[in-house]
Length: 379
Image (tube, rainbow, N blue to C red; front, side, top):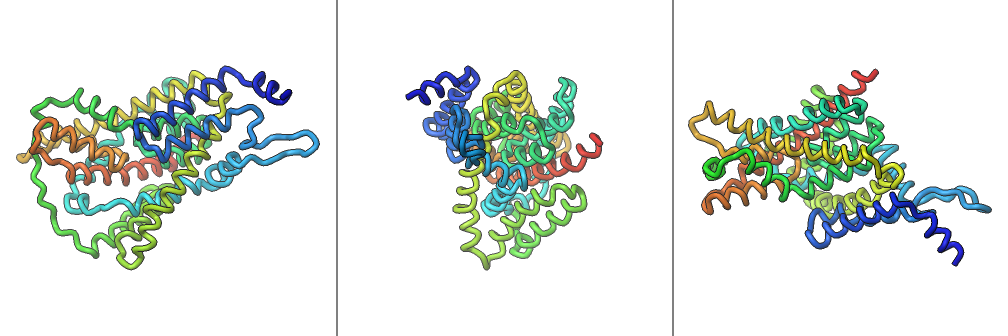
């Protein structure tokens, strides 16, 4: 009983805040269905790591010595020491992606590149607000709405804000169906959202599907060597999908591997959500900057499409450019829904999917470029 009272007395207001954060994440996962495989373990983990004298963290026990906590051990092994968890997750993501719509319409590559603008814009804003370059770069990558890339970049750069960055990246990824429609409607007219696009896919041969992940990996290796781990694991997963001789492994990567790593990653990242490091003004600022990066990525994709329309006879729906972020396939579904709200006969899904998978490639390349450039600028 005395230990119970001691624990209750040890609870701080910051820990209570983190309990509330954990409950909100669990609520969004269960009640709203927002990325439950991520937000549920993150929310529960936020509660676990903030319990007084929590056994999931390393601690010294009188008469026993140091006792290792499971979440801290997972974080040390799976994220801090090797970045293994986010990298392994990319194999599963790559196995899920069909690059066919992108390969049949290669101009969609442009949308993936354009929709990374918010990342680099927010890096500049964060530096001007006083963040170190390594922290600013880690904050900017939130805009890609790509949780594993955000975790890996912030961890490799040794950012002081891995926890807030991870929470922001995954939260905004889960909130794509809410945030993107608001941003898109703010910069498009109803007439623009009604623009129809004919879908006449070119034939994509099996040879091209198989060679594509190899070619992308090699090119990425020369352009941004630090992106090889990110791009390589993503493309290896896709090669499993397309090779046609490893179907059981492809299915395992898409389901068992991706689900297991997502579960472990969600609860492991909660180690960086300890109240004393998480509850501060910087966290609120990071959440705001992450939202700004995400919105600017979306808006940049829209405006880039409008710019291309100035020189094109066949007009493209500007909303397709907004799908150039990395949140696959949520963003492409949002574009399809918005298109049909404007015109029930408007089918934009396959165009949006092409831009969306392009954004997946572009986001990991952007992460690799940041990992290449930032250390050189710091040192």
